[in-house]
Amino acid sequence: MFITLEGIEGSGKTTQIKNIVKFLEDKGYDCMVTREPGGTKIGKKIRSILLDPENRNMEPVCELLLYCSDRVQHIKELINPALSEGKTIICDRFFDATLVYQGYARGLDIELITGLHKMTVAGLKPDITILLDLLPEIGLSRAWKQIDNGSRSGGETRFEKETLSFHKKIRAGYLELARLEPKRFRVIDASKSENQVKQQIINALTTKFS
Image (cartoon, rainbow, N blue to C red; front, side):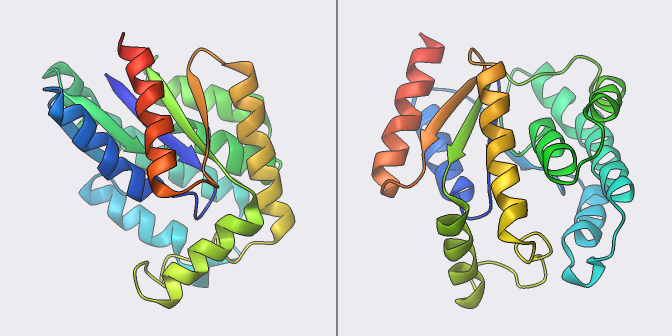
């Protein structure tokens, strides 16, 4: 089983991944948590480049190709072997994030991104994608609060420093993807309390597994 979590900055993915793992392990699933970018040793180096606020002048195509490079390594080194072993993978962001951030928000050609996706993932697709939906104003406020109190790294704030209009495009892009693939996506109201969000996700997973 391949589960991905998507959402804007500050939507609570990290917190909810912990809840998902506990729920699944209690049911006997062998879980592995990973993320993009940065799920592998090489990916961590790519992540440091992509999220460094000093790299604010990075060209969108350069950004896109770095994400694709991270994904190729991630799939070959970690995801495919884990799936072959029968593990349940919970991944913080995957291809949908690239389509939304570099396509809908940056304005790169969607067909170009989709073509790169077909080349890099070789048919791999999440069984279910949990979209934590939230107003960008709320998400960014949460994210900066975590950065200011030290619970998140201040060295990975390149996207948090983007304009509000950029983040609104991201949210709209995610909701459009969910509309286009309703069988795969589960849209969760991330403005609720942690426990309420957790219960929404558990309900979605229970329905999927049943």
